Image 1 (cartoon, rainbow, N blue to C red):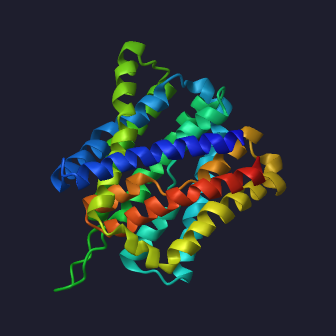
Image 2 (cartoon, rainbow, N blue to C red):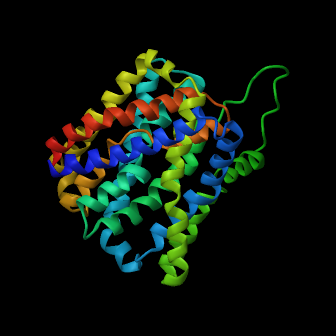
Amino acid sequence: MGQFGIVVGQLVGFLIMLLVGYGCVRLKFYGTVALNGMCALLLNVLIPVLVFSNAVDGTDRADLEANWGVMLLTAMMYGLLALTFFLVAWLLRLRAERGRIFQAALIFGNAGFLGIPLIMALFPQQGAIYVALMSIVDQGILWTYGVFLCEPIPSGGGETPAKPSLGARAAGLLRRFANPAFIGIMIALALILAGVRIPRIILTPLHTIGGMATPMSLIYLGGLFATTRWWNVLKRYELYAGLAAKMLLFPVAFHALLTMGPLAAVLPVTHDMVTMICLISGLPTMTTIAMFSGRRNNMPEYATGFVLVSTLFSLVSLAVVSSVIM
């Protein structure tokens, strides 16, 4: 019941901020232009600063060496999630942008705004280092593969375009990595490996700026709910199959793989690390996926619907998963 109370508390706060954003748009305090500005501020400043400040705060090379199993588990989780939902999308015959957004919505859970407070509450002693190490892998994959999945597929209309050269394709790949959040992660990792400590006088305002990301992202998403026809996702059969697979079946199966199979004896991980990563694997859709799709006008209603419905469903699913793996 303690863990259930923590989850409910996080979701109640999540809902209140969503309602504030929804109400502001409905009352015409601001509209689409302001929402676009909020999205740009979040993606280019607030979220990168949040990731960077969390990663470098109190983390050193010794922490990396002692707890690198968290990074390994996070990479394993994303690899299995990506493979699972690529296959699920193929089996459900989801093609083009619909298939890609479906995969993105179910691969990337809301680790930043729901997972981090949950981890800190459940593991008060090691939670901070778990968050820092997980964020390095989590944000690295989100801002590369996640961005790729949320981009529109180039149209093949008109004349057949010339096949891009190897250099052009390499440049395109590098551009996907050249975003503020991923650059912030790489700088943080370099500072940790070099043993450089950020002075508290600098880190404190960075934490303050990064702390704005959570409420603003939820207020933004609430406004997005008011300006998009997100409820159409309720007619999509893949919503129900995807949420059951992602938020119930996958966390339990992943926990069994890590604790009952041959991996249990060889992985350099603790029980708390396994519990943490299995809870993270069952989180609802990351709000950033709706931002990625919204900024390119690539099925934003579909992505936003996944965020809202999965968040509401997580109130039940996280309690169920917790009762099985804890």
